[in-house]
Image 1 (cartoon, rainbow, N blue to C red):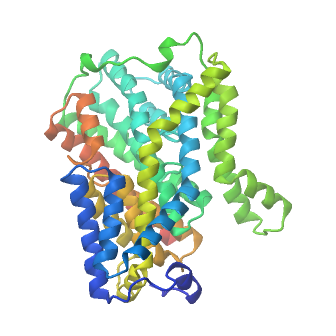
Image 2: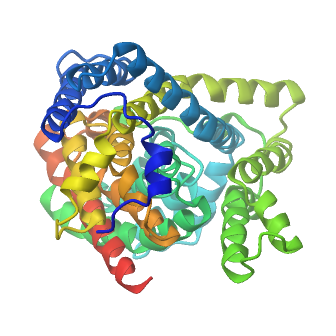
Length: 465
């Protein structure tokens, strides 16, 4: 494992705000994370407040002046919002347009109409993957649950045979593919290239979703046999609409930001000349802000107008899309503050010093850290942000592709074994009408499969790229 260059070390840890030794810094990290875990799990304090208090505890135990700790936390919070806040907001607007216009239902109905009983689990993972690109996990799940329950009931399928592929498609996108908040925050923390991370994330997400979805669903259906609960058969958003956008234009709108960002990544690799006109154009249209903004503006015409949305309705849709993400934005921002506090007290240099002779891969180490925090807090986003903060110094000397793989390794670790301290666990349990034990044998195992298989593909790619 290589040592940080003097330039990068100076950039990330200029004048550490404490002169504490490695032992004291190590204790400070453990205390800071312990405070974070206890506040989230035991007192049920909101993650934003927990991260803020955990950062103060981290700095205090490290012996840093609290005024400087506050400055570090505030700086990290501000830079994170600047880096990913607008992207999360744009992603939320696009997702709301997709849901309210009936575009999501159009994708679902079109694919299901062409799927046979044999291919239905594969159709479900495909639908969830497409819908999951611009949507947060919880929103995607609310959209997919009516479809899962209806298909299982009408086709006389095992609920697990249909539900697990849908959950796998959504979860893989949530953990591995930007513009979801976790991957975006990790990309911002370790200065990864978003286009490369997106390309590698999709490459890893496809086989991972297949293994954890259609393949594992065969086993899950034998382990747990539950019938769709009638009381939870919710209505679909498009049932109130007289018309909705077509399948082709909806898929085009959803994939537009992905295509633009991938074009930028491809041009950067092929041309590799910052002064070249083609690359400069690609850098603009493939910038995440421009790519997502373009998709939102296009979506207002391709999704909103076909659904009969007036200007007032479009304005209302945008307004209602932003309110639910306020909490998510604050959590991500506070995670950035926690990360900056870790860096400024000198934890990055400490990790570099003590890991210099380790034989463990940085990718595996990042995964293990994310797993530990995920198991303790139940939050994939908190696990991603915290692990990225700890791993930031190790990314300084990595190639752009390996920094992207580092992000994906953290993302995979953040999905490991969802259990009773994860809100998603209870969401799945209630929607599918399962007991706690049944939810563990299906949902929790599926999340673990995604995490482990994702890591395996990350490590395999690291050998090739």
